[in-house]
Image 1 (cartoon, rainbow, N blue to C red):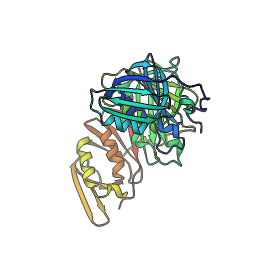
Image 2 (cartoon, rainbow, N blue to C red; image 1 turned 180 degrees about the vertical axis):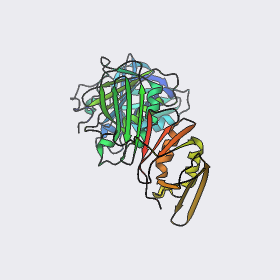
Image 3 (cartoon, rainbow, N blue to C red; image 1 turned 90 degrees about the vertical axis):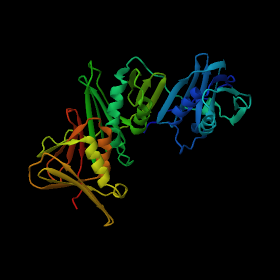
Image 4 (cartoon, rainbow, N blue to C red; image 1 turned 45 degrees about the vertical axis):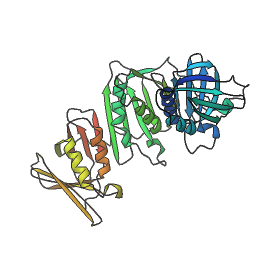
Length: 386
């Protein structure tokens, strides 16, 4: 597996000393943002640090775990340009204790120590030189793809929970991203469930197919969350890397090598039973039935009879819970069981007031999709009916 940077920088001559002034909330927001890329398990001491690069254009912060890198610009008054790497955890903890609105100064001395001052408060940190810090590639705008940030955020939210966390199934540890024929498609699966979402684009884009690691997708989602006034997300692909740019923030990630499994064969084309359910009602009923079983690998049982759906679960003979919902069903009695976590995840992610639950047999997967949205499908394998 290739890492993000490939090589480390060669030793360089002594960098100029760094001297900047900024607002606490600006520097703290930047530190928090890039800190997310740092791995607590790194064996390279310099990778526990944040790269500080001060220039007349302002302050640039960067971090990486050699697989995902994050870079952002911080508004700052640069008195003297310079470059160093600062212990991420320590500076974050110190800045957290300061009130918003306070002025903060950061200044290096000849002994590779950074002194942080705010009013009468002071923190001195031993830094490491930039010499051994990995080089993060710059963003290439030439072949960048522009996507609406609200669209990207929605598609991530409705698929990311289905990604596998099993490291032995490495090709499933990310989201399959497809761009072709004027459509954008995201697919995620852990082998027991699959989330598929497809949306139209206003214009045809170049053909792209790539598996983007979970960590990079989660960081992009975090950046986009709660931002209703933002602009577009720019994406740029190389053979083994993807870069996202949103405003002044850049995320760089290696791609997962390998072939994503064929998903067309997994999604059922027909069903014998279709139930229209209110999303909030079925979510709450499933959560109630799963009390005491959610963290024990238990199942919830969906039992159908004319006019009603009973949702029930039990745990080791100690807990029994059931809920009942009125449904438009006129067929024979039918029962199927699911992992409650798999249901709760999708019910929480969908914004539609009503969903369709499509079933065939107790042994075949069920399909959940929002009413009125044929381009979203969530496939979930059943469990053994007890």
